[in-house]
Image (cartoon, rainbow over all chains, first blue to last red):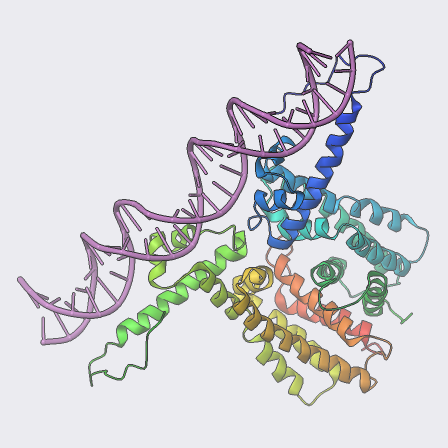
Length: 214
Length: 214
DNA sequence: ACCGGATTCTATAGATCAATAGATAGATCG
DNA sequence: CGATCTATCTATTGATCTATAGAATCCGGT
């Protein structure tokens, strides 16, 4: 669709950059709006009109920036997962106890809810509706992330820091379940802030998987 | 819509019951189909045509049994929540330790996934799309259920069985988050069965909230 | 064989939605 | 000024979806 081959003929010093930069800024604004309506009404429940309304432009104008609604969903979902894997990998690489790593992982998981809640929510709830290619791409990242957590738990079991009779995969699923659900209720009736939730959840989790209470 | 006042004029021995019974059976089959597609593709992603296809009938024929797609969603969601509150209340009323009650609550929460997974999933993921009246009705039941759990936890804290420094509401949210997430992955890649998941999750949870390991 | 209700079908209205085509206003720059 | 590029707009197409209206079919009881 976008027949923009590399702009080979760019003339020297002058800066036709203004556009490229503005374009990127506008795309980002549109993604913000898309994330908001996708998170609120779901992918199929949200119309491109809803997105345009937030920005105060006409529905058709969106297509100057995005080739399709599906692509917009993919971009929103990617922005919702990306960072999770890197942050987790960094925590897992620290030279410290497995318990401490778990605390770090819980914190790292909840942190994005502070500034990207709509993206995270869209990733969590709407990624099923991605076309197969995008879903696989997103799924790979997501699974890699889970594996990082699972490894920390396995090592904690192997080292004797965590219960030997526990299944690392099930522990991972339990931990992720707890953490993911925060995205659903944070900012609704309950008034908890991210840091206290992270601390309490890590505490609950560790009490359960550590051999001795900390 | 349903102007069925009590059938006062039913003639004696003959059985015009056949219809009423068959109608109910058919409605139930349609609800099953609706639950399946709602769970799979989401409320807005699923068309009434999809529901009809499962049953091998024409799309318009559905409207002989249901006045609208929204009502069908309400019925599916209700069938997805109902039972949770009663089962939990029953467990909470038992004369036993708070820990034992938590084990029972986790089991009771996961049990419906065995025979009503699509209804539970639809309730969990699609209830936001209900019209306000239905949403409130479903929400009341759902909140009452949470309160039962919260009370068991509070009492466990008060009695000294659970950590004094823990917030019962946050514990409730953590427990529900863990349990709800099972609906998302059960029967996918992982091969766990409901009873083992219930036992392990209760174990993780209790280790975290009990004062001493059990 | 026929009647009457129960159930399903055909046909279609009416609305909404994603996406395309082409026009236009505004800025930038030679 | 005039040319070009950017961003948005108007107008519309074609597909899809829920829901309604009314005809056709099935089936048990007589």
